[in-house]
Image (cartoon, rainbow, N blue to C red):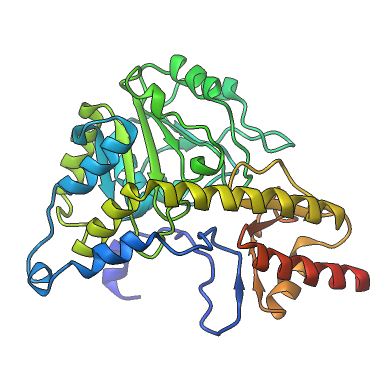
Amino acid sequence: MCSWKKNVREVVPYVPGEQPKQANVLKLNTNENPYPPAPEVMDAITLVSREDLSRYPDPDCTALREAIGKQYGFTKNEVFVGVGSDEVLSTAFLTFFASDTPILYPDITYEFYPVWANLYGIPFRCPKVDENFRIHKEDYYQKNGGIVIPNPNAPTSIGEPLDFVEDILQHNPDSVVIIDEAYADFSGVSALPLVKKYDNLLVTQTFSKSRSLAGMRIGYAIGQPELIAAMSAVRNSINSYTMNHYALAAGKAAVEADDYFRENVRKICSTREQTAERLRSLGFRFPDSRTNFFFAEHERVPARQLFEDLRKAGILVRYFDRPRVNNRLRITVGTPEQMDRLCQFLEEYLKKN
């Protein structure tokens, strides 16, 4: 064995959804937005000059932070931005979870949480969601080194009301509580109104879902200035220039194209409700989705079999091969035409199986 290998950090990495290389694949496996970004986004990108690209971007991301702050009623000192909400959350883990006391997050949730915890040596405990995949707020009354609650949760698609979040905050005044709102725009519930009231609350969101910019990798956090300053200090100790010129320009334009954003969210939610009816009529069961995806099981056909047969038909969905969720598929909501293709395939398939 090579002697250098004993010094290598070993982690179990997060496995992202498949990105197909072939054409005509119906991609419903990574919860991307089926609609393109606003036209203003493309206009903003074209204004980035060759000279801009020979210079480092603004390390403070001032224009983007100001735009996000203005949109939601905060100052730029209450906004942190990063390369997708993954970098934002990773920085938050590294910044706020330095205690020897375990942090808490649900046992069925975003699979990157344990990756960061293990990578940074953060102890953690995972209260179990119940048989209906609901989080119980009482499980988060115990002593902890921090809390992460995704609302709505993924992959379960379940959202909780604002008083649920506030209850957890009231019971944990000495811990940083992160509310991961990657899908909040599809639920209509956000903890942002609580930020001014609680100095230990950090709300994270992303441009990858509702704002159609998964390819630009933009995420942000909103919290009181002391939290944001602490995150900025940690990030600047690693890499001050994480956001490139194109992402900064695209992000600002996407925030300002508010009408376009709201119309896309409305269309996706409408398609979600229509598709839910069709899937239920075909024998699927799933929680009431407050996201842009379903967490579904079929009454007869095992999820793994469905996953494999859908893939053979050029339809990608997400399958999680682990206990408690291994008979469920996560199915992204696409355009009406895309969901029609999915449902038509399922109608014919289920007649034969």
